[in-house]
Amino acid sequence: MSSALELLWAEKYRPKTLDEIVDQEEIVSRLKKFVEEKNVPHMLFAGPPGTGKTTAALALAHDLYGEHYRQYLLELNASDERGIDVIRTKVKEFARSKTPPNVPFKLVLLDEADNMTADAQQALRRLMELYSANTRFILIANFPSKIIEPIQSRCAYFRFKPLPKDKVVERLMYICKNEKVHCEKDALEEIYELSEGDMRRAINILQAAAALGKVTKESVYKAIGYASPSDIEEIIYTALKGDYNKAANKLRKIMIEYGLSGIDVIKSIARALNSKSFSDLPEELKVLLMDYIGEVQFRLTEGADDEIQLQALLARMALLGKRFR
Ligand SMILES: Nc1ncnc2c1ncn2[C@@H]1O[C@H](COP(=O)(O)OP(=O)(O)OP(=O)(O)O)[C@@H](O)[C@H]1O
Ligand SMILES: [Mg+2]
Image 1 (cartoon, rainbow, N blue to C red):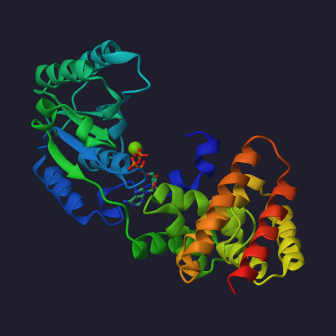
Image 2: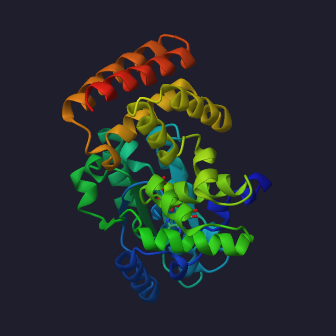
């Protein structure tokens, strides 16, 4: 493994065996049964990114064949390879290669199978049949609906779910402990919210925040280049109260500190206004603000000055805030 990959925690903490996989219990127990029986069907793994699809396929191979599982596993990427012809040649060669000692078949792992055209999938289906005596296919897809029916019906189907909050936080905590990184629980919870159950993304954010020293809410937002929601909310409150100067100063400070662009800030402001924190604002005020935010956002994409545009927005907030008080 290259040293760059070793430095990536998401790779370093990829579970090696089925037992180490976090959550996805039903899937893991079905796969373990296949290992026990040394009998694996063709399979379709589907679900959102960073939920363990590739990990589960590799762990299955590890548990079936042991440490040296790589020689009995052909990894292909449907969108990398130059079409079905390359896949056909590689599978043909692989099917002829050495068979594992205790298991009567080898595994072909085809990632991003949902990126294949319907024609290529038809050809793939024939391949699966042709070589089913000594190979089993694991197809991985984000969108299973893009897999043609004849393939779906030949595969055992596994649906991976976004990982739940407690499991993600627990895993992040484990990593922090192992890496001897100081972390705050509410920062880990924030990471979970940002990652939406994608463990890869959660671990990547954790590592980026840890690189700034400690894992706190602040370092998390700094790492991903967002302003923290509480800072943005404070700026909006201050402006709506009519204290334009204070709001503008605070905004300038966090833009410099976090290295934010005007577009970053305008998006955070829009997100904040639509969140629970501002659910009590009069509807009409919110409509007027969102309308103006749209205008500012457009001007920024056209190259208008960040600072002046955002100051204009805060000024508008101060004026409207007074009118609605
Ligand atoms: N269930 C899980 N348990 C523990 N770690 C996980 C799990 N799912 C994902 N991870 C972490 O996230 C990384 C990426 O996971 P994996 O490659 O399995 O995602 P994937 O589901 O194949 O995503 P994609 O659709 O993007 O290919 C792993 O290296 C591991 O660190
Ligand atoms: Mg994957």
